Image (cartoon, rainbow, N blue to C red; front, side, top):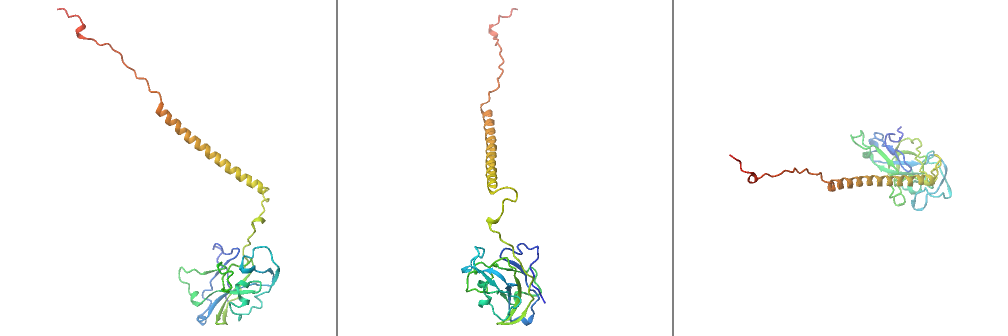
Length: 253
């Protein structure tokens, strides 16, 4: 039985704070499923306490609200509960819907064998525009927390399950830390010292740039002045007496 897996570790962003990337189930479903719709099921693997999704599908990363019990979906998952029902609606996940169905396609969406150059991955949680839109209960919206989650592919003919894969291993997302929770004292520096260091660095850079500009333009002015107003070299004028022939006494014979 095929088990869904995350994409290759070499793929950037394989898991983020609200998404993860799966390999497509190529060559898993056969011709007997050609008239079925293949869905991705995203589920809570085990019962636990959580917080309800804020009204309107807003981000759940705000202040904690009243805790609610989240039932386990995987051990007693009912394949006959169709997509879009209250128990399988993304907008109710995971507070009152322990699982939801999304990314529906047909067998043509997963051709076998894979044509060259085909993209063979699915990013779960990539749609933000429909996260709070209850008219789109199968939205592939951002996941509401780090998880863990488990997924499987389910083939439905109308509402009748006709094929499925095994459940994946638990998938845990990255944790988004609030900005205020990041410690700045680990290196022995306070936030004030870091800010002061940054300001001094900027001022030093400005001072250095001013000095460079002063040296450059000052040197240029000196060069121009010396070439324009330099004292001319003295020119030696040779002095000589003129001799006129008519002033000389007549030569005696």
